[in-house]
Structure formats: C-alpha cells, structure tokens
Length: 352
Ligand code: ACO
Image 1 (cartoon, protein in one colour):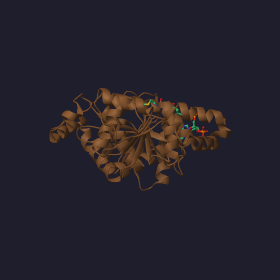
Image 2 (cartoon, rainbow, N blue to C red; image 1 turned 90 degrees about the horizontal axis):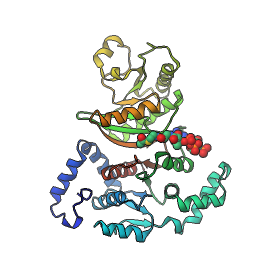
Image 3 (cartoon, protein in one colour; image 1 turned 60 degrees about the vertical axis):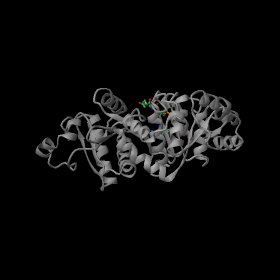
Image 4 (cartoon, helix red, strand yellow; image 1 turned 180 degrees about the vertical axis):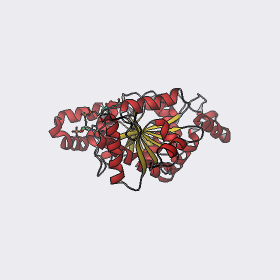
C-alpha cells in the first residue's frame, strides 16, 4: 500500500491492507511468508546503506510496521527525515547512522587497515573508503557486530556491493568460494538456481562447493529437501568435452564429500525434470523424482536462465541470496522493487 502511493495515515482497514500486500506479493507470498515469520521470531538489526533512497525508506516503513527486522539506515539524518516527511512515511523508529561522522569510525578504520594493509590499502585509504562508501561502512558494521546483516544494491552495480563484503568478511569454514542463489517460484513448485550472480569462471571445485552450500541453504532456510541436478549440455558422458567432464567431476566430488545429498549429473536440463526418460534410459541415476536445485555450469548459463524464467517463463524470483559468507550480507538486483527489499531483509535476518 505504501509503494502504490496510498498515504500511510489513510490506511485504516488493516485486513484490506494485508490482502493488498498479499496479492502484490503474488505466488511468492507463500515462500516469503515462511521467511518473514522466521525473521519476526528473531528480530535482527539489518543495515541498509542506501538510506537516502526512497525505495529503501518505503521498505523500512514496512519492516517497522510489520516488525520484521529493525532497520538501520545509513545517510544524512536531516535528508532522510526530510524525504520521509515528503513521502508521508514515519520512520521515527528506525536507527539512522551518519556514517561519514560516526563515533565508531576510528575503530572501523583500525579494523579495515588491519585486514587490508597487505592488500594495498593505507590507513588514509581505509578512512576514505569508510567515510565515502556506505557499503564499506555497512559491511564493517556487520563485521564488528553493530548490525546482524546488510542488504544493499538498489542503486549500485552488483560488484560494487559484493567486493566490500568479500574483502571484509570471512568465507565460511571449509568453504573457499561464495555463490549466488535464486529461488524461482512457479505456480506449483519452487526451483533453486545457482550460481546466478558471482563466479564468472567456475572450476569443478567451485561447482561442487556451490552445490553443497545451496543444498544446505535450501534445507535450512526454506525447509525443502534438496534434489540436485548438475547441469550441462551432455547426459552422463554422452558428449566428451572438458566442459561436460568438469560437471561430472564436480558431481563426484559432492558425492564423496556429502554422501547424504541427493545429486546427480552431468545432465541436460530437460532430464532434470523428465523422470520417465531418466528412469528409462538412466535408471542408475541417484537423482530420483524431479530436481528442485539446478546447479549451472557457468555464470553465463545461470544468469541467463534465471532472467529468461522471469521474463518469459512467468516465474517470480526471490534473491539473489548469497551463500558461503560467514556473516549475512545480501546484494539486491539494481532497480529492484520495495517488496524485494523487504523479502531480502527477512532473508538476511534468517541468515544471520
Ligand atoms: N568467493 C570467495 N572469495 C572471492 C570470490 C568468491 N567467489 N571471488 C573473489 N573473491 C575474493 C578474492 O579472493 C579477493 O580476496 P582478497 O582481496 O582478500 O585477496 C576479494 O574477493 C576481492 O577480489 P577482487 O579481485 O577485487 O574481486 P574479483 O575481481 O575477483 O571480483 C566479483 C569478484 C566482484 C564477485 C567478480 O567475480 C564479479 O564481478 N562477478 C560477477 C558479478 C556480476 O556481475 N553478476 C551478475 C549480475 S548480478 C544479477 O544478476 C543480480
């Protein structure tokens, strides 16, 4: 209701407000509700570095009204309050941090310098980054425990947000690479796509690592039992090419490392869903039933596939959800809508 321009003070019928919110969330509502309910139970503090963006303020309003997370807005306090007033928003319960003059800046500079002094950053450069780039400041808040998670990217290119996270936060123990996941919500099922956003050139090790991280995330966050198809242009050795062999090798690595997971490949994407054909021609396959996790062989394939599903396949996408970082940071797709920001804050809270 806030996004569609209905002034907040005019909302008197809360049942109608909820119905309108539910219809706008569409099929993603059911999946979103699981996440939002989980987030409400734990009430985390999520920092939003783009506090001076109107979409972020509108999302903050919903997060506060529905008590999903406690938002921390970065930016100029006067400017943020002025914008909120102009758009009839009440964000008085949000914490606003003026990062350029924050009291904690010296401690943050010390920590960034400690982390990056042998990676080309001087102390002055650290101060400059933290006082001019809210994404660096936001990630540092998460590192230092001053926020439980961060969501950013409405007005930044993806690498601009992910790079500070990679430079400042640790990757989870036993993992070397992070990856990006989308939940693609269709009429009757939800299918998880990865890697859709991070690793431009994946080795077998990266693909195996991605499959394991995604499987754990799908189970833990979405309460869904993962059935993983490792995708290629070849079915179980039908094409002998290094690209297909890479996927077969990754599949074997996962089977060795995590024998508890249901996974097979390499396979073409239709075989992931055509169970009759799989049972007939490849009855040895360890994947039984329709796959619900698709691991793509390259970023090109994963990124193009999820966007095709959104634009032509009628799917709604929840994400991108970063997997593999020790702390909770999520990067929005540029120009995403208010509902997406709300959902991603819920995901960040659950992740934290
Ligand atoms: N996992 C863990 N760490 C990583 C990864 C990874 N996948 N990639 C890079 N790093 C680390 C590097 O080792 C480096 O660590 P260090 O500085 O401590 O030594 C640090 O991250 C920074 O590395 P850079 O060299 O600055 O970054 P790089 O050039 O490798 O870029 C990036 C990383 C930004 C993720 C790059 O791979 C990229 O641009 N990926 C594609 C992003 C994109 O455009 N996605 C598609 C659009 S988004 C959408 O559709 C919503």
